[in-house]
Image: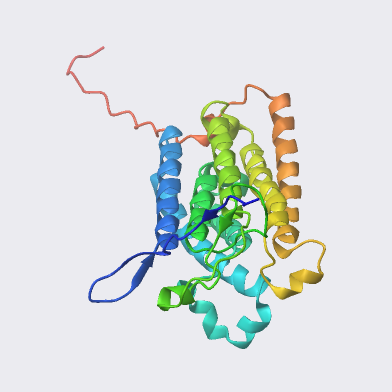
Length: 304
């Protein structure tokens, strides 16, 4: 009996910049599109609540820097610490790949703590309830970038939707004949599906249910949706580093557990607040126009 599967021959390189010779990869394009989409949705949220535009501009800067630094350090220190601590200059070579979503998340948490202290003077949860609404879309696009890179795929399977990936990437790009993996789980697509579902739920909670009134509720649901799905999809993935072979759970699962617990706690607190105060007023979350001082009354020359 012949197995049905998909042979994935996608070229990771979208195009090469003329005269310069630099490759532009689909992963990088997906990363940029995801960020632009996320920032566009957050801007809509800012306008919906008439929030301070300067906050938005500074939030953009904080999030971009924190994501890149956190994701890179997360990959280097969580998955290959011995190598990168012995070759620290390699940490700066972001263009060679190696970004960890858990590290990016930790980086953003630190950035939002600073942002809340120095810019908004509101709680971190106030910012997260708005910032995370589109993040599922961003994460899904990054996973599609992994698909184009033939990386982060699952273990061998006989399911009809299995993918055969190029196993000798990036050597294949330099003239070597492609070597394919056995039919494997396309875990990039599994994660992308759940991330998009999480983003849709967060959008619904914000725009339809107005759940940003209850601090931490949207953020808690986001953490559960992203990291619980990540935890279960990890069971279908190939081992990424050798030390995971002796572990009952891999590094991605271990790093997801604290976020899942935090998500359950924030969701519980948010639902409790909603039950106690279902008609919460959000006037304090809006920028109230400052009234102009009353001008002097014009003198008419008549005595009263």
